[in-house]
Image 1: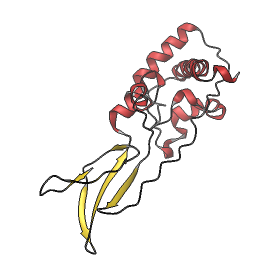
Image 2 (image 1 turned 180 degrees about the vertical axis):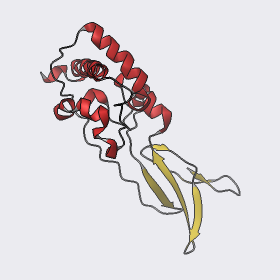
Image 3 (image 1 turned 60 degrees about the vertical axis):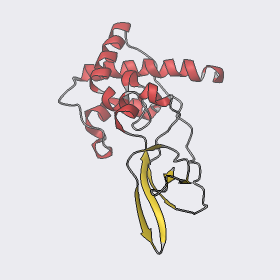
Image 4 (image 1 turned 90 degrees about the horizontal axis):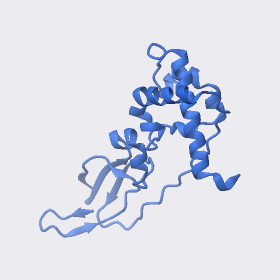
Length: 185
């Protein structure tokens, strides 16, 4: 919403399709007034509290919006692809290894990927990994995706600890399949 500074009258209103991330700036160009602001879905809430942030019904959609005061264009709805269906391999770990993997995951990975692997959508939801990503999981954790922003844990986690985290993620993927896709089978 935009209000006139002199009397508080509402001048304009539009959905932003995501969370407003910063204060707006207003300016004049060619005798017209514009308001510009950033939208997206970031910060601690959308990453660390993934399960709760999903309840907000917002998906990551980052852009800079500019509106002309008095303009009549409408913001298009974002076209989000469907969420990926999990493709976990067969679970081979023991219940004890899975429990250790949960603790390791929440201790090392939850800051970006959400508690219990439930991402708010800004970073990959580790419950929804593809078969290919599962095949390369250890290499990814050890640094294979540095260029995409995934840090290396090669100096932090032992290979067997990475396997335990992976086992926990396989469990979480199967839990998600049971919850969201049980009618597909």
